[in-house]
Length: 95
Length: 475
Image 1 (tube, one colour):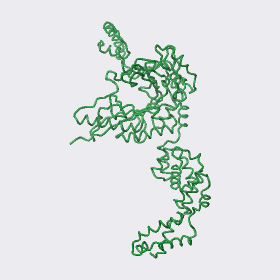
Image 2 (cartoon, chains in turn blue, orange; image 1 turned 135 degrees about the vertical axis):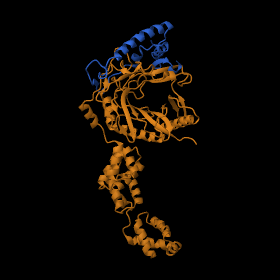
Image 3 (cartoon, one colour; image 1 turned 60 degrees about the vertical axis):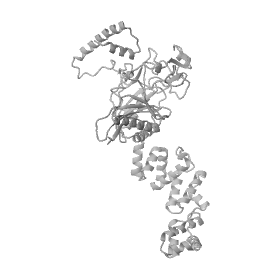
Image 4 (cartoon, rainbow over the protein chains, first blue to last red; image 1 turned 30 degrees about the horizontal axis):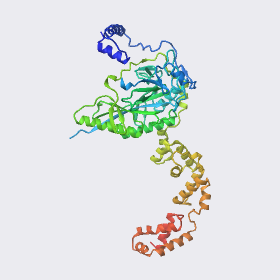
């Protein structure tokens, strides 16, 4: 069972604010996921390479040719708080 | 009796690659454009977009790996490095983790641990009353830089002093510059260096606790920052305290070191394979293309100039770090029947006149004529002093040194009758010196050489002057 400290740590990494009830609930749900991973861990997987990709494609590369960028107005269109030609955000240092 | 400590230093260098477009989209790289004018749905991390790797960035990565003697991974993949910060639109940086493009390697006396490819973060402009990071109320994000291709080079902890770290970083920079993979400008941020620093009692092998020193954007700051951190750690250990593993910021103005991130923000990047990008499996064609694009690099060039041309180490070093001058030197040496030492001297003289940044190939002085000047000196037709005057004229007019020496009356006096008269005149004018010489003080003769050279305007051959003096003084 995941401790509430562990749940809060993961929540902080994702910038999520949880109520005490949510900490309790997610602790249980995340523990189930981890239990399942541990089940897989019991298998003999020494010689099985990790599956990072499920499709058999390599080197999908792009030529270094410029394509037009978006006008700044378009780029900022969905910004919740556009200012000075940029995306204004609360100062990260202040959080 | 206090313990003597030995610093152990490793470097992490981020290099912006000199591609035309970003790492995973077709936006052009930004050089001071208006904020957010070089973005697209991919580099803004909008939903439903897919990144595609820039082939040129991969080639530059392979070139760096080959140049630094790395093993190129037969198959490498990208990972997502997750962290929440406004400089990343997606909430993660696409980087490489346990299977980087290049492994192992060496440059000079420092082993390379790995080189991997990743994307650069955006720039945060901090606004607020103070204008500084701390205490500012809001930040404005400019995503122009976000997605710029980066190569991160990680060394083994093989460096033992701040000076050595600076010198090695200069070798790396010159190597990368000549490779043509990056602008490698520290002030502009296309070359960024972090240092991992620890100390241990001299003679021991176990590594001490290391700290990571950031934000040293010049070679001088790299040296000052590392020295300050070595001093800080030494003071800690000497007072019985211990070093804490943390990320530090060096302030070049005050010379002080401060903690950059709080402990709770300790690295927890939750890497996992980037499912949107397929593996890089360098083909023989990709390897051959990268190999073919690699020019001769400074370390090789320096060794070749020393062994093939027999010129002094410092001159070989100079020409290796300034390949335009190196190439010019080679031409002069070949024109001058490979009298390379003389060629090196006169190319260095020309460099003093034109400036290190000038391209001698575009100057009025063609290699054959500089070789001819060296030959004039070697044949004792012009003294070294006069040859410098001839070179001044060559730079101005592009005339042949033979013609200049003749026209300016700078050729060595061949008529020993004239020189003989001048020697006799100077002897008669300096009876006191003559007396000393005749009295057994041979060194005093030197006092006569100066006036003779003045009379001849430097055109006399020193050996000949000495011979005539001895003859006429009967010593």
